[in-house]
Image (cartoon, rainbow, N blue to C red; front, side, top):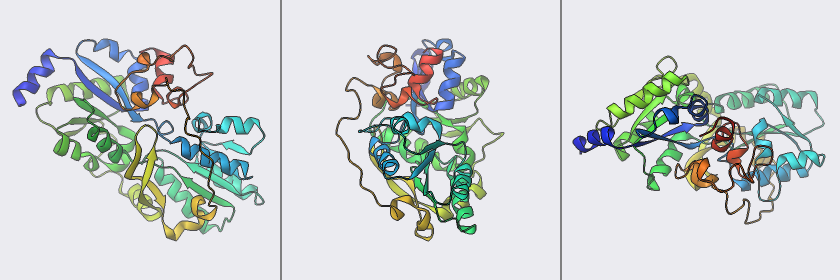
Length: 344
């Protein structure tokens, strides 16, 4: 099998997925796909943190806004479609929706407006979870009563396991350097052990990604997890950040756009901190509609690495950044938005 894989690396175009949206942007911005034409096909994966948020979760946030809560979140999320509306539409209708760059800004907003109930919508992978955990600790320490968190955090290893369990055809993975600064490389060792995949944790400069691609090409017959981004990533990761996550959060089943319900792929707030858990403190059941997206939208297949944005029939015609139909055109880390800005 090793010999066949070596021959494949020489004679056949390899299919490598860059999981992280930041990597996808660098790949497009510096025309790396064109550079590797005929040798490597680079496809994007489920690494856009707001693209993977299920429409049902967007509906829940919208329901909170309609019930009079002040919703605070990161900018990209407000334009992601739910099944009934979007936060941008609700903002236009006068609902209290604020955009911040840090959960600490949301906490400060709650302190400055004690008569308003503030819900911070926490999205992102392991990269953003430690600061959210520390913000919850700070809220408890300072006795802030009008602040809570809706945790929509997702974890990266579980979605990659699910991706390969669906039978996706990939020769290698470029793993997200930002996530791995927190987790380290150990949680991804199953990719080599269980699926025979060579994966590289890469930095974000063009030369980092090119070096990572070459590592994959040279080690197809030696499945393993390689750390190219050694200046920021270690095998064990950031133990302080991991402890903050473990103190406040616990694994939970989570619903992913395009993938459905995945066991232990989210982070729920532990009972000890449940006063700050919006789901438990303010239980609300939103209204869902079955059809959330245009049936021709290919975002789900794009996030699975099956299609590229150029293969979506809506791309650049009906679906543009100023009038997005699917989530991949909304977020700055979404594949379609990146392809639209830089080309394929």
